[in-house]
Image (cartoon, rainbow, N blue to C red; front, side):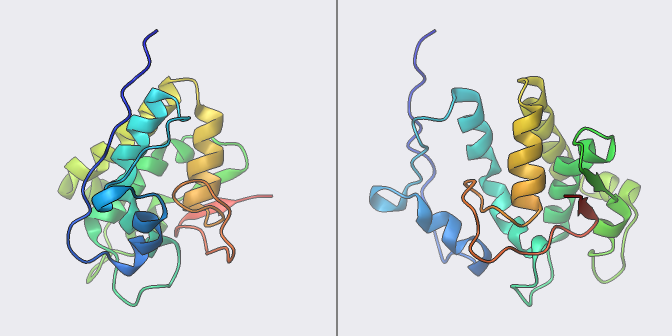
Length: 174
């Protein structure tokens, strides 16, 4: 199998939102370009690059931002976590109705979120499905579900010095 080319990533443009500041500055190369770690398997690196969109999901996890979360971010997170609701990750459960309550001005039911923000929901669901299909369901559960969405790890898998609350609707049993 040939070694995949290291992705020199996307150029960071404009001001970086507070929720994503630590993510965007933690691993950048020259000219503010994200450099994917070469030790990651090709598939996981492509998933990680696609997950840059998830940087804005940090506002869903804690109350660090006064700004309300974007409904598209909520739909993306719901898509990423849908498999948890189906029982994929032991020790975790997900109630999408609770996450739907974050939509303002009027909370939406999961079916409405999936319909209105279909593209974002499908992106999240597809990324989660790709990770699971690559036989990394345990890694998906540990890294994304209990780690990133659970508030204990940052976007890159590093342990947060101050853990945040899990995404609304996600329950992690220890």
